Image (cartoon, rainbow, N blue to C red; front, side):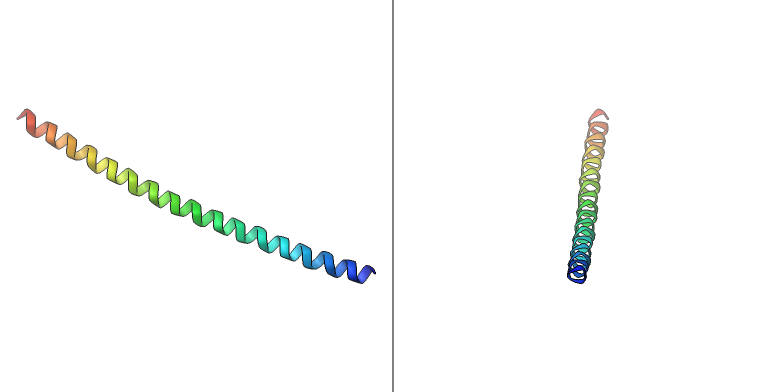
Length: 61
């Protein structure tokens, strides 16, 4: 009985550890993807503000 219990516990622990590692990898990938999207949006907003600033400068001339 102890050998069965030990084998079950070992397999269960191994499975849970694998699932946790995979979940953290997915979480890291999602964070990286969101970070890239936020950087892209920041770049687009910055370019938009620069264009507005240039237009205002050109209108004042």
